[in-house]
Structures are given as structure tokens and as C-alpha cells.
Length: 588
Image 1 (cartoon, rainbow, N blue to C red):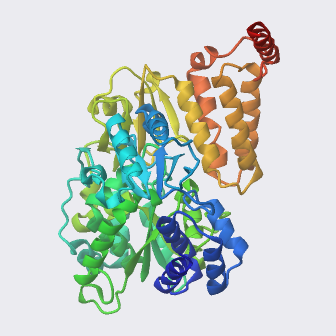
Image 2: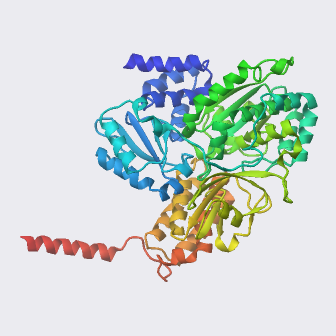
Image 3: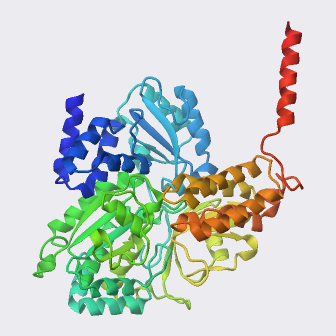
């Protein structure tokens, strides 16, 4: 067994050319193959890569899907995102534990299985979602859970499980220019070469395309700044770390529009003068990796990637897939770059920004999947690609899930009111919509005339619907737990503040809340907003406090009209002890 393990480590060292920047990729592979990263593995990597053991241990402790303690041969993670929670993920996780005789989060005594909860798996409209040894399975129900238990007990190899479990389809409900786009392979690149960098930048500027990851920075301007740098080496990075709960539109683009993505990245490289690119793919999208790799190879084989693209001497660009290992904060571009460099994904202090000081300190364009795909369409068809009849240029892909008849992906023109989106997806009796994920905007029914746009409700794509059956306090508590789980732990205000926020939110949800608890959360929010290192800590208290503001009755149902109430009722506990003693005395 030791020889096999050593062989695995050395295979990874050879595959990644003993480059310390790829230590995370090596660790991830070892985890998937062995369900543990052993002390021996760490020693070999440390000696071979000239990295301190402490640094490698720090990486393992930082990323959620890496472990120094053994997991089961079947490593099962149920998504605990709010949408999966609404569809019964906790119930299915508990059922599987009951059937297998294990405790949640604890490996079985025989080492066969570990069942745990994790953050959003990106299967929000197809939940409850689950990962088994890194592979995604959707729509878990009692029947699937019971069959899964039987397969695990029989030690059935994963490749012999029902094939239909691993088929993840995409519900493309409403198509705009991007989802209707059927590219002529290579045409966007031919036009980008023909009109030159200045022509590309002009088309992007005229189209009004902005980054679709939430910030909305003009795409042409980002590419221009990178191009204007006096550095010789530049990079293009696709942010495919789609970790925001309720977001899954990039998953569909990676699955069905990979050629468009690659042409968008390559056009960017031609414009800014980059020769190397990365697709940073989240761990939960492992099931997309092989298909995406085939697409990359096909582009190389047809001279759309590699040296002298389309026969043009000196135009060289290639793309490599880099897998994440479980960290929500790596969705932030500077944290993503830290991860690409083989480090913990802790957001950098900015400025300088990645566009001038990015990967390995060089100018780097980081855009998400959707942005690169729209750029490819613009370059093939011209700046009118994003035009529509409304007064706000541009389109947006929404990942719609939650309480509606037709969850899925909707491509809508910017300026569309929330009310129209709800009508399109068949939502009825809606009391609230969460736009932009847990740290985004909670929109109550009185605000449904607000619209999706950069000026009003800007979003990376998450659109979660809650009907009148949902207790909005439960939703806010789920979001609060999410932020505490995903805090990188770098700064004290966030590391400690998110845990304190969870304690106070749970106290209110458990019926022990009082006015002072709300005041304490408001004070804590002010501290975290001012002192946290990045946006996670700055937004972590937003869900619970915004929900209190807009759905006060959801809180007051579980709060007493007192200044303070302890979470632990001492008198009730003593009284129960007296009852137990009395019952034991009578039984004698």
C-alpha cells in the first residue's frame, strides 16, 4: 500500500513538472484517489517541491475537500444550500446515515463511507444534489437514497452505479442572443485578428458589455488596461468557480457552450497579447472536466489553440484547466489567482488589481464564463449582438430556482422587472426573491417592480424564489451558516464575527431571542463591515439583518418582548432534573 501511495505522489510530480504552483492539483488528485492525504504524501511533496510542510498542511486545512484524516471509500457530500435544503437535502442525508448506521460527518467504523454536508454544489434547480467521490448526482429522493445505501453496502464500484444518476441536464428556459448563438467555429477569432486589438476593444465598448460576475466593470476597459501594461508576459483566466448559492448558469455554458467560451478567451488573448490561459473550474464541477478537456484538445487539433493560431505567425495561446478544491472565497478574482499560484485562496489587498499585477505578478484578465461567451458573440456578429428593444443595453443569464414551476436558466434583457421574471418562470404566491446570492439583495413582494440592471439589482446570476410557505428567518439562518462555513479565517473580524453571528441567529431561531440580540447583531455588522479583509465578512450579517428589516414578523413570532433572554433556561433544566430524580425514586 505504501508503494502504491508513493507511486501516486511521484506520478503527480511528473505530471505537473514538479512545479510548486500546482501543488493544489497534486493534493486534490491524492485526495480523490485515496480519500486522505497522508503524512507520507506531505513529506514527499515537501521534499520534492522544496515547500515547507507547514505550507502544505495549511493548504489542506484551507480547502474543504482536502483531508489529513481518512474519509470513507465512498465520500458522500449532500448540498446544504438553501435551495437543496428546501427540496429535502437534510432529510435525505439523515436517511442515508440511518440506513448505513453512521453519524453525519463521521467515517463508518469499517472505513466504507463518510456522509457530510457541504455548501452549494451548483445543482440548485436539480436538487437535492450530492457529490460521491467528487462526482455529482442530482435529484436525490427516498428511492435513490435507499438504492445508494444498498450499493455502498455491497461495495459496488462507482462506475457500476446507475448511469442515469450521473447525467446532469440543463434547463434552458428562455433564450436570448447567447443561448441561441450557434457559432461558426473560428469566425470570432478570424474577425478579432482582422480588426485588430483596437477594433476588438471598440466593438466591446460599443456593445456595452460589462463583466457578468457581479461587479459590472466594463469588459473593454479591463482588456485595454491589461494590453496597455508594459509587461511582456500576460495571462487570461476564466473564473469558473461558480460558488454562489443559487447560481448554475456557468455550469450550463461550460457544458453546452465550451467552444464559445474558448473562442472568447482566445480573442481576449489576441487582444491583450497573452500566450497562456487557465480555466479555474470549481471542484464540484469535476463531472464537466473531461468533456471540457476534450473541447480544448479539439481546438488545438483544429489550430484554434496553440502556436500560430489559424495560420497567423506569432499568435500563440493555449489553455489549461485548474481545479479548485472547495473554497467559496476563490470566486473573488485575487483569491482565485492566489489559488492558481498554489496558495491558500485569501483575497489580496487591492490596489494593485489583477489586471496589472495578477498571476505571478503579471497583468491578468479575469472574467467569468458568461462574459467570455458574450465577447465571442460580439466579435463574430458585431456590437449589436447585445442590442434589444429596451433602453438599457445588454442581457443577463439568470439562474432561477426555488419556489416556481419552471426553474432553470433564463436569458433576459437588462431592465426586466422582477415581476416579469416571476411570471416567466411560473412563480405564484411569492413573498420574496434573493437576487445575487446570500450577500446580495432580498427583494420583498412590495418591491417587485424593481428591475435587473447595473443601476438597480446587479447580480452575478443567482435568483432564488420563496413563496409564502417559507419562514424567511430560516432562510436567513441558512445564509448566516453559509458565510461562517466559508470564511477563510484570515482576518479576526470575519473569522470570529461570522461565528458570533451564527450563535445569535440560532438563538433567535430557537425561540430565545430578544431586542438586545438584534442590537448586538447590528453592532457586530458595523464592526465587520468596517474591519473585514474582504467582501465575505463585510456582507456576512446582511441576510439576517435585512430579513429582520423586511420580515420582522418572522422574527417576532420567536422572540419575547423583553430586553434580554438567555439561550439556556437554567430553571427549566433544574426542574427537569427534579422530575427525573422523582421518577427514579418512585420506580424503586
